[in-house]
Length: 279
Length: 330
Image 1 (cartoon, helix red, strand yellow):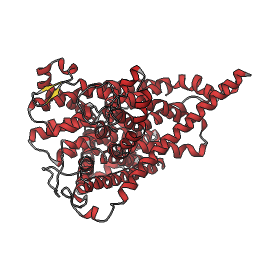
Image 2: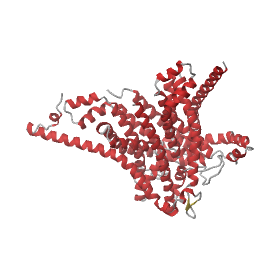
Image 3: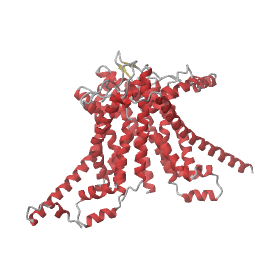
């Protein structure tokens, strides 16, 4: 009887702990989001989206970092998506069991969680150091290096899900393979492929470390790809660590914008992903 | 059925000649597409190779200057250009260790809750919420850690630790000094919050892969839920859990922004967890753009190389374990 009791009690304690752990995990999410909304809503106004970053002690907005982030994200996606998608296509369509695919998959998985600051150092070495100055283009390339593994992974996963009967049907009517992939497989996996791109955008929109020494920062509005450009994460980093109240308030607002952007993207990606990915 | 060769042909030409021409064109396009995809797959390898080569190239001057001493020297003096990696490496390892110490048990408990206790209708929402936590950019954790979490720790946990362990020989030096708020312990705690979602979602996935028959058999002979988890689920899922933990460790080691905000950036190794310290990534993030002189820059790149090598080993081991698990299941 005592053994029975002991087992019951031990079970009860561990299950209680697991419940508490879940509460802690969810509570933390609520705490962070709560603090973000609480701190940022005070200063949130339209001028955030229409004015430039201010000098210390003045009020202003976040227009130039928002535009900078958008520009660099778009360029990164434009560079990274085709590259990643084609690589994923090779792995799923041509060399599904080849040695090259296995090696690329392994390396890609490592790149997927490699420290992003190392990517920043890499792009600094090959672009910034060679050119002799920081540039938005270098920032975009650094982000593209982070986009590629995400897109490779989802493209491969999604194309593998396309039923082989579709491919056999294409082959039976004599369709060239490239055409089969572009007109049948891509279409069948479209939702999944878009999910991958959305996830990649979500991933890079908060990346700070690779931009610190590639795109650097810019106090002013700039559309020049060959010059330093402001971005939301870098501005948050600089402003949050500054002693000025106005800058810190703007950092919180920037953090709120990024967080809700990223959450919206991940939720959209998830909604797309759970829909039927295959025709 | 549409004959693609027919569709592609230019009707201005006589049909027979243009048909073979169109087929040749298609064949060319096919070959070009294949080569393009293969080239891009190779490009993934080239990216990794490029990262390694560029880091080694950039780190070479510092490594030549300091040699093996770079790894063990604690000095970090930009004025006399004397650099050593011991303090950042120590900080990286200690903060990651604290993070894993906290995140692994909590992550496993949440995975247990999600697979064994949680009512069905609640599993998906909670799972999604945990995964959203993984999607929040690290800079958000950083700013939250700096303005909310660090002051909170300074007021509550840290004074409590100091007074609680002040008289115990070993622990007193571990929790010595004034409560700064920021420091090694705070950075470790923030990291724990960051890696928790990774560990949780992978553990949940491998827990769910345990065949229900095994669990049902255990329940059938009267095991409690805890006994089932302890003796059936965990042994079966061990490889996967270790893989997930190492994946989380890889993240923790390389994490930059969340740590940079709260670690204090002090180049010294101190026994106290409450003292400010630094990590490899925080050092690079803080100092790289201000580094003057080739040796300083090169030393920072050498730190980056060191970080890459450490995380590469950890991540490769994690992927290897998870890969082996996939083969066993699939």
